[in-house]
Length: 287
Ligand SMILES: Nc1ncnc2c1ncn2[C@@H]1O[C@H](COP(=O)(O)OP(=O)(O)O)[C@@H](O)[C@H]1O
Ligand SMILES: [Mg+2]
Image (cartoon, rainbow, N blue to C red; front, side, top):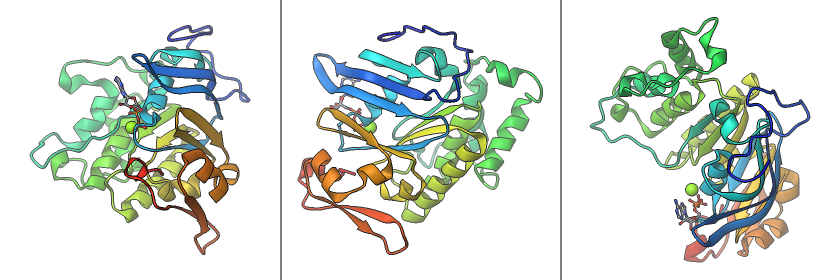
């Protein structure tokens, strides 16, 4: 299987237990005539919780686009045992930068319901086969997932009246409502206060472990998710690096990857904390 849409296996074929949920082999992505990153090799295993970090503009969102089959690439991308496009029905995706201004009257539950069938916007989405049978009552499904993300107290309010953290929980519910096997989240913690970042990170970890969902989460600050990670992917200077937290989270390794001084320090509670130093403006948000 190669390039944009070369599904060699049927979409419905379940991946073998030992097969990665996402694998890149020598993948290079270009936008126009510019290479964003090259020769990426990755293997994200089923059920892993994986952070994608790197400077602004390095190509983190582009990496998610490659998993979604939305950018042209060289090399081999496999998602859930097939091509990215064949897996689309099993992927939940929360794009970067969404917040709703105070005047937005749409209720939280309607935002979640949009993820299920799009019916209120006049573009009905077909339900995935596994949700069509059995207990596939859409209202029930929306209520269940709203409860699972802990949003039941405000889900019937206009979303513009919800706080940033509340909006984010509802958007996560939207991404989860079709029971995806792979969840892609692009900076879902951005612009949240520290307690909300920690709470949402723990919530995601919890839901995904309970339902065996593989998660790839783009972060600009890796610290709120550090305690929960199985793997880290760093996108920097046209390359993609990956490894376990133990492999990648050393001052030497991160400084080499980013090309600016970065320290990994003991947080005093058995964990680690990543600190960038003397960053140039281009690298201000290096991690
Ligand atoms: N649709 C696009 N067309 C052309 N260039 C793009 C497009 N999207 C992103 N880029 C460029 O690709 C590079 C990587 O972007 P992106 O993946 O959004 O970075 P990140 O998410 O790490 O901040 C940037 O230089 C950006 O300007
Ligand atoms: Mg981005």
